[in-house]
Image (tube, rainbow, N blue to C red; front, top):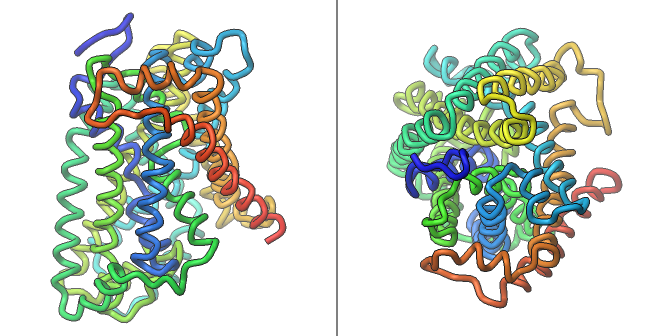
Length: 449
């Protein structure tokens, strides 16, 4: 294990790639991507999504890694170090606040996934009402709180163990397992009798379903899926050795993240079509439609449990990075020990997440902006904070830190692919404009749409 001025570093390039990929691969890949594809014409959405990944996701992830490695600090410390005596540290503060809020409700949804592992193992009946099962689960008071607590405890223990002893060790164990389970589910899906209709839906683009909302969904999904704008990649980049290529590492992370989302579609759509369900089931696809699909499948309880284990693993590797962002700030700036930071901040996030858990039961009458509490948290973080953080980070790299310095860090040492002068156009113009449109559209949809 290397040290840099007392700061832990990843034990190897592979460890960094797996940890960063673990941050990126989460509920957004396994749960959100399939239902967005289902609502937006299958492969038509996939093509647009891939373009967004290349134009926005890849350059911005390189930028966040570079900011982290150049400063060797948490997001707040990074902006202070690269632009001293300026208010740009507030962008870092936003990058610390955002994962704090996201993790508070992300853990609630992840807790649902963990609970469903055991619901599947208990047995799935084709005649059961899985919509009512899900409603019954989230409207219970104590059950979801307990699963929320269990999931946060796993996250806290991992962060307390350190970058190498915790995050790196968990990523090296869970990421291969995640892809193994995903491949098993893909094989099961595409070998079901009659799976061709689902494969055709997924691979044959239906551009008649493409509208302005499709592009907005694709950009938003690329942003959310890659953990951009939330300080995670800045924090993980701060532990990266100068010997490692940022450009090639980012390529691996983006590639693995995209592969996971792509494979999730193969795992889900063939089975959904075989058993006569709708591919455009929205956010209920994972918790209401898929349990019904598995219930009709031979050995469906086992495959259902594997799916929700996959969902739980993906959620955990992402949650770890979210807590690490917040913990790294108090470790760096406040001198807290890692164990103290993990325990206190993890407990605080658990408490902040309780309204999201109770928003479907005893706090169900509280509707900020007309939304359930969990949806309100999600709106504030994903529709406002994430795109705003991405816009400001891009502007900072292009015009404050300057593209010359950003490129020097990104291209050191020279990677498989190096950015040139067009990096300024991407980061200084295209990303702020496109992501700005996403921000405005999200606000318009909520308040006027």
